[in-house]
Image (cartoon, rainbow, N blue to C red):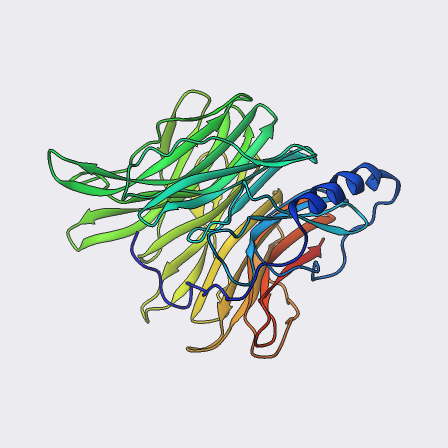
Length: 410
């Protein structure tokens, strides 16, 4: 895909990966999960005591919260994916050499229980080969699960989003590179994988059309599944117009039989959707960002009412504003998370929006770390109106890695 503005591409801090070993993390998580029911408290802090760039979170209850990301310090070929768990009393860190960190793409997470947690991303198998990565926590071990990577080197295979409804039904989405020897065309196609309880397999995604044929650049960035007959995936693609190539929103829906493209509106190109959440068949939100006249970005929020997707106005507090996570709780309650830059050249600040059934409004978020430190929110999840979790990371003092950031609202 086309490179994003520099302020979006937050650099990975360098230093050594933190904290517990895989064995210690797994043992702690298993032991604390078992006793959580007898001592369960909602998380009210802000910093799980680990250096992690959190990019995904899922809240199953107030005493069962999972988050994932990559180490907040030096990222090497041996760096593991970080899996964090709140059991109602304390946070634990789970890692495994079998599940390496994604050096390029961000991790995403889904869970149906404390013994069924999925993490997806990508991994560099060789300097020229990026493969899909899927890790699974079964309550006692964090292991890598075989997943299709349809593109051969040097083309990419990456997963950006995952959603699960049961131990036997999960979806993962992303993109893969391709090359057509007949036309010598190359590009990126949407990638959809499905878990049936036994294996991950590739399911054909819909390829958006353009005036010159199928889009040569299309990618899915997030997915939400309510059941095996109603699943949404969102992202973006390039289309050819009289004005040239334009990046526009992409929304696809699984109806139990096939993936099809749903019409989605656009504001000002480029347009991109980075997160999606559905509360019911008539209430879903997709969020992201769009370009502005002054080469900045502004937030995008699109709503599904059971018949059509429409754009709903959303605050953009700075010339560079973006939404990366969303949680739909009810028709009168939704949350969206991201970050913004208040002025050109400024630091990233956490952005949190709330939908009350009538409008989106900005919710104040405290600043963490030194005054110059970027604060970013990447994900949102809710198990109930009173348990809304948003997560990301903030920078520590110079020489200290990125710090895990998890906030409770509702």
